[in-house]
Image 1 (cartoon, one colour):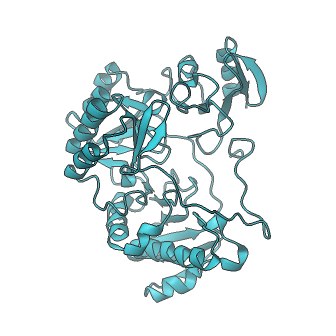
Image 2 (cartoon, rainbow, N blue to C red):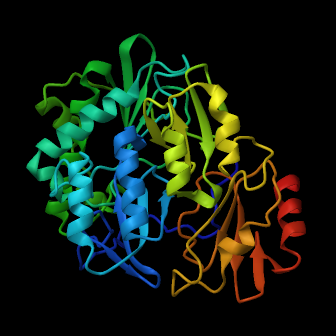
Length: 408
């Protein structure tokens, strides 16, 4: 795979140049609302992206009655509500808690768990990591110290097919054959029994907290720690009673996003236009579905018969790889974000289909960009863009994006 975009990703601190954070993590949550130009923003962590139909209905109702009527899907398969009023916090919390979406108010921002969305549905992979995600979520919420993790700390659970392994997890579990699992922790990897996977992930997270507290740099994620304070991963696993064999760290590539369409004969995968669902679209997805799984590719896996695809396409959801809007995402842009230089979402609607993902960014922060290889469309003014670094006018965007998607 080619190197991930953007061209200038945040650097990993070099020895002697360790970043010291002098404030806590301000990452938004469901209870800590973030101010934006279009109102307050709430980010709801959904471990493995899972929603039951009743929970999806509550989320749709919250979007309609408290927000702008839409649900954004993040690159970690979480959900965001925008356009919230300043005084809606109590009502929102009551709705979410009543639906079982806030099992621990103290831990709600640390439930960042991405898992292979198709696990247990299509016969691929070596383990149903969706079940691991539920157990890990329960373990995190039951551990008081875990509440100190940053809202950016990420657990990745890959069932062995390689679809999410390359998404930059701080603690990654990759299922293997014969009941084995590889635990990836930065520059270290361990082989252990799948039965110990959840306990190992929690032990690793607590080992990071120990190292972070000892370093005193306020690190949010392991790669920010100074070299003198690398967590004692092996010691933490041994203390938890887990037999773990050190193994070489595998090379991980970022897999291309899976195409929308049937997922075996039990489920289907659709994409949300520009990563946002209307309340009506979310309700349409629940029709006849056993559960929904929001994906890191800003889509939804619905556990339902593939025959539902035509009805979902009629609701404006993306059900084909060659459909307009497929693999096109955008940040909030104007008017929702004060930093944005353009209404990038409106311009992204004109992006033609193609083989590579495309992300439209309103400023150089490139919020929400995908991992792996993608076409970088960056606004530099009201009517000007850079497409993979090449200056382009708004009127020439479709042609420039088509060229970038097909000639890389």
